[in-house]
Amino acid sequence: MADPKGFLTHDRELPARRPVDVRIRDWREVYEDFPRPALAKQAARCMDCGIPFCHNGCPLGNLIPEWNDLVYRDDWREAVERLHATNNFPEFTGRLCPAPCESACVLGINSDPVSIKRVEVEIIDRAFAEGWVTPRPPETKTGKRVAVVGSGPAGLAAAQQLTRAGHDVVVFERADKAGGLLRYGIPEFKMEKHHLDRRLAQMEAEGTEFRTGVNVGMDVTAARLREEFDAVVLAGGATAWRDLSVPGRELGGVHQAMEYLPPANRDLAASPISAEGRHVVVIGGGDTGADCIGTAIRQGAASVTQLEIMPRPPASRPGSQPWPTYPMLFKMESAHEELEAGGGARVYAASTTEFLSDEDGNVRALRLVDVEGPASGFRPIPGSEREIPAELVTLAMGFVGPEKGPLLTDLAALASRDFFDARGNVARDSSYATAVEGVFAAGDMGRGQSLIVWAIAEGRSAAAAVDEYLSGRTALPVAVPPTARPLV
Ligand SMILES: Cc1cc2nc3c(=O)[nH]c(=O)nc-3n(C[C@H](O)[C@H](O)[C@H](O)COP(=O)(O)OP(=O)(O)OC[C@H]3O[C@@H](n4cnc5c(N)ncnc54)[C@H](O)[C@@H]3O)c2cc1C
Ligand code: SF4
Image (cartoon, rainbow, N blue to C red):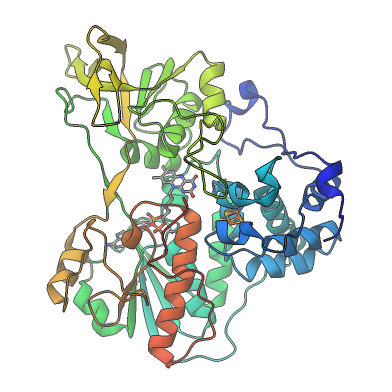
């Protein structure tokens, strides 16, 4: 512990967000730079607890007190080594993770937790800037071939670990570029894509091969893949979206969030589904909804309203969500700040009952009703029905699991036992193995829509299981067993 009084002398601090009226005119990340001396003070707040609960809060088991201490001592080179020991992609988590580690920080019991996520991202950004992040190709090759289906954080983590273990790894991705939701789901203002590209370049230099534009199950069958490779890792995500079956759902201008966000991320200047000049309603109060809000505002929406069926969450921990759990609290993401600055609203405890059409078959308004609930269901409050203008609607109501396309249905036909679990995700045993010999599953495809940090943790762990399957033993670390129940 570098500074025994750090937590008494320094308050928690984070970098400022760029002013709203400036940042909504571009797509760059929203945060200002954080001066290095200020970061050292934040690292100094870490108490290096005897039992660091933050380790347990982080699904990757990141060695947080160690790198806080190293940053305080100005040993950044060693700090990035310790960071990479447990996390392949801290530049993703340091920007995008909801930081369950901070909810579990002991300092957070009666004070503000350590700014762990900020320290994490500053370490990796400096390491890239200094040229310390270089390819680490394997010293020896095993001659075994592994196919990874899907190039989101789970597939990338599995691929990097397995390549470094000496296997020949090919990542298949149906999109034109690798990255999964990091590429086409998450907007530029949350993570600029050059962070992803530079990590992919490192992976290619290490020997990982990427084949994009290949839809496994359609362009190449699952059985063929199984024949050509010694092992297969399924990391195709949980992309089957939840829909809203109310009258008018078929109208023009009503889109799923993942129909709206990918083209917007592909073409920042001229997306084919643009919010420009339109009244936008985002249905769903989570992260995906926030991404739709920030995107619509940057496209020049006339107004933005967010609807959420659940009541507004509390501002501080309720007794039912005690430390060190990750509490469901009212959040003010950057997109929410932008929404409020533009006069938009977040409406809670409201349910959409109908989309109303203009004369061309496009949505012009949305009918909603306030509801009571969720205990024993949602009940409409009589007399609260009303209409709001809606010329572009995005449905951001979550995902129900992996798509049951040819890839999974063909594999299910080859399976020796149930291929899917009770929730419709791909079932795994404690070694990430599915019911088809030599086929493993990691990330959202096995656990349902989750978080980047969990996808990386599962990708790393599945890689260890595959390595052991192929080589009879493994030196790769296991971050998390698939049965672990998430705090988040
Ligand atoms: C809009 C949005 C915003 C989010 N924001 C955050 C956030 O800020 N922080 C956070 O922690 N989490 C966030 N999440 C959740 C997070 O992105 C996911 O949990 C994570 O990306 C899952 O990683 P994955 O590798 O399992 O799958 P994915 O990232 O979904 O990647 C799966 C990949 O597999 C490919 N694929 C699927 N089937 C095939 C096939 N048959 N052949 C070839 N390729 C295939 C897909 O094209 C995709 O590229 C967000 C999710 C969404 C939708
Ligand atoms: S990956 Fe997430 S939970 Fe782990 S240390 Fe980073 S911010 Fe915290």
